[in-house]
Image 1: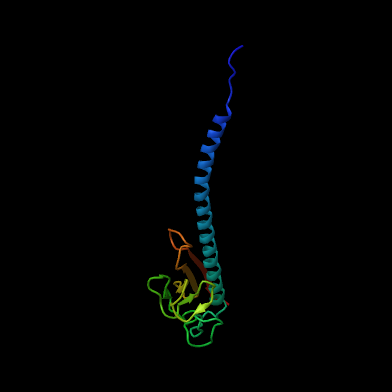
Image 2 (image 1 turned 180 degrees about the horizontal axis):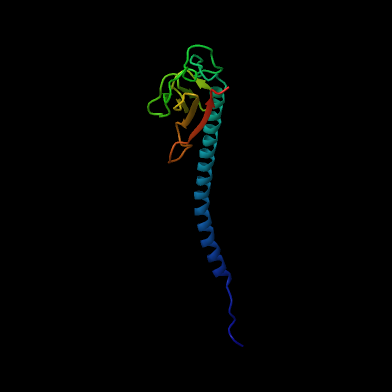
Length: 170
């Protein structure tokens, strides 16, 4: 009779131990990545939601509105810049650079999306600009929302940019 060949119980247990160590190591990385994705996804979704809210607020104004304060909610009929009023051809107002916000074209939100009176405690910065075309009958409205944090990890701050156009044609 020849020697029997096969896998012994000891060899099987050693292979299972190695597999367990590898799976345990990868599980930690997987859990970390899943948490990061959740945080980034939630914040990115909110930046999109808040950009849409501001765009709806601005698109509801009349074409030549130059007084509505849209930095507060609900909007107030005076004290703001509206859609820049009656603008010359190829002109622009406001700005979308978070590093240099323009008064009357920026507002700040806390982590729950509530409008704040200043940048103190803000988690989201919402900026907008309005530009006219060469005929001054079309306004391009750009809204940018940027989060203050990255959702708990390294990387870029979630940012959303929306662009709409409003015409003065009757």
